[in-house]
Amino acid sequence: MRKIIPILFVFAICSFAFSFPEKCDTLVKQVAEDNLAISLAKIPVGQENNFGFANREEFKLGKIGKPFRTITFTNDFYQDSKLTDKNYILLQNEWRVPVSVNGNNRILLTVYGKDSTLNVVDIGGMVLSKELQEKTPISESNNNYILRVYPLGMDFIVTTNSNQSLAEGTYIPMQSAESFITALSGKTTFTQSEILKLVKEKLAEQSKN
Image (cartoon, rainbow, N blue to C red; front, side, top):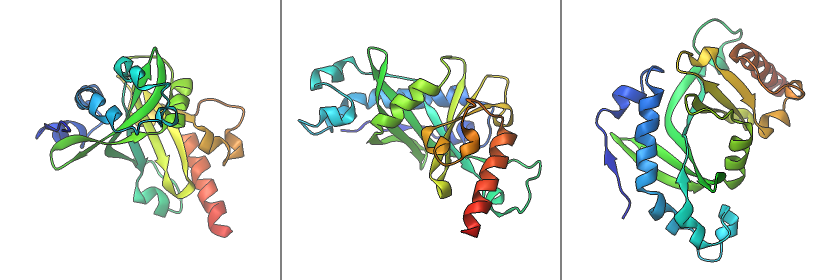
C-alpha cells in the first residue's frame, strides 16, 4: 500500500516563497524514501533494464538523492512583448527525486503535492536521471530545480546556494535545450537573464513559422 504523508503545513512552507527549499527537500525525500520499495516493485518483471536496473536484487541497493523541484515560466513571460524586471518564474508542487545504486542514478520518482499531501505519482525517466547527475554540480548545500519550457519542449537545470534567489541562480541547458537553441552550444552555464532572453527570442522565431 502506498504511503501518504499528510502535511497540512507543506504548502505554507513550499508553495509561497523561495526561502525554505531545504525544508521542502527534507519533506519530499521522506516521502520518496517511504515509498521507494513500493514504487520499485511496480516495475514489471523482466523490464528492469528499461528502468535502469540490472536485476531486481539491485532494488535493495536503491538510495534516494537530492530532489529537483519543477519550475516553469509564468503566463506573463509568454504574454509580455518585452521582458521587464518582474518575476517570471513559477514554483510547481512537483519534484523529480533520483534513485541511485552504487552512486549512479538509475531512475526518478515523481513526487507531487496536492490537497495537503505529498505522493509518489510516477517512476521513470532513466535517461533524464543520468543527465541530471552528469550536469548538476555536486553540492549537498545547493538547491536544485528543473526549469521546464513546455511550449518548446526543453529543460534547464537550475542551481542556487542558500543565499541565492532563482534570479541569481546558475542555469544549465539540458540536451533538449542545446539541440533546439544553437546559441546555447559551447557554454555550460548561463544567468537567468540570458536564458530569459534566449528563450523569448526562440518563441518569437517559432511564432513566425
